[in-house]
Amino acid sequence: MKKVAVLGSGNGSNFEAIVRYFKDYEIKILCISDKSDSGILKRAERLGIEAEFLPYEENEKFFRSNKFELGVLAGYMRILTPQTLKYCDFVNIHPSLLPAFKGKDAINRAYQYGVKVSGVTVHKVSEELDSGKIIAQYPVFIDDTMNLNDFETKIHETEHLLYPPVIKSILENKLFSFDMILKNDAGGCGSCGGCGH
Ligand code: GRF
Figure 1 (cartoon, rainbow, N blue to C red):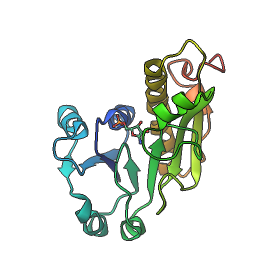
Figure 2 (tube, rainbow, N blue to C red):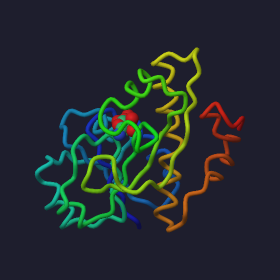
Figure 3 (cartoon, helix red, strand yellow):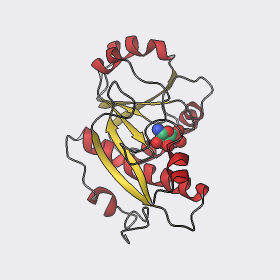
């Protein structure tokens, strides 16, 4: 069975979306957090997923001795060291259309800037913050009636829609295709506000 490690420091909503998406698949998910009181660890307990508090300094040793098909960063607030990156392929999700708005507070910064199209990016993790090769992106359109809260909600909905199928395509060694979300069982994404699906 393929093993996937999901690493997060905060709320854990992407982690929960991933767990729900893969519930009928032969995939073992382990939740890892560098914060002992994080929401992601509480969600793991609620969802019955094995979880571990792992201080940042112990990552290298942990990934050297535990093999995963993929490491999935979902709100993990530290930059992984080159040594840790040697032992596993990692992907990350970022709440903007990279390379715009790298780093923290990306949703608010994009909104305050007045951008009319933002979105979500899944990318490979490299040694530099939010800079690895882009795997998939999905847009969120911002019209003038949208307040920051609406925009933030839309971004998170889009993350939850995009990340799980992108992870699936990576695990299956397939290229990600938009059909995976546009032709989903829910009858389309209903997410970006632009394509009418
Ligand atoms: C998401 O917006 C993600 O793009 C960013 O951190 C946030 C994590 O949210 N990297 P959650 O912990 O998954 O709810």
